[in-house]
Amino acid sequence: MPALQTKVFQYRIWDINQKSLYLRNDQLVAAHLQGANAALEEKVFWVPNRAFEPARLPVILGFQNGTRCLASPPARQPTLQLQDADIRELPHAGAAAAAFTFCRSYKDGLWRFESAANPGWFLCTSARGHQPLGLSRHPDATHLLDFYFQLG
Image (tube, rainbow, N blue to C red):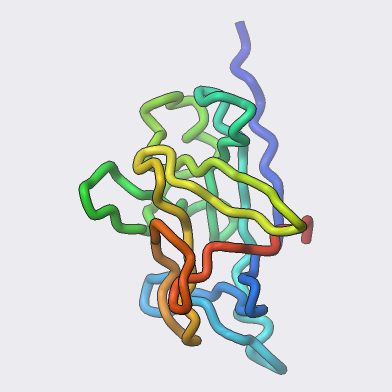
């Protein structure tokens, strides 16, 4: 039986303060990118992970044309990492790709991305610019959990 083909989608992602993601020192960082710096914006590539409940909209998120993927290995105090991995291969790992899987939720035009390996932890940006993308349990004045996510 042939393997399922994995369609990779390319999107733009930015936080509610209009900060885009770019790569600095091997980390994804959020900042206002204007003028010539706008070219630094990293597009997000994503594929569904069919090993998880479809109603939770589980996705694997990649950057740099899908050659590096966000990961959050299970931990008491989880961290976010950018790992070398082929976004087209990870969905074939099924539940073993939990560290690379984020469940999307949508409300009022905004998206949140919850770690499948660390339930209750969400992707976040800092209210300050040029800070790394991270994980947080709750939105507050310093952790922004809501993102715009659109075909781009």
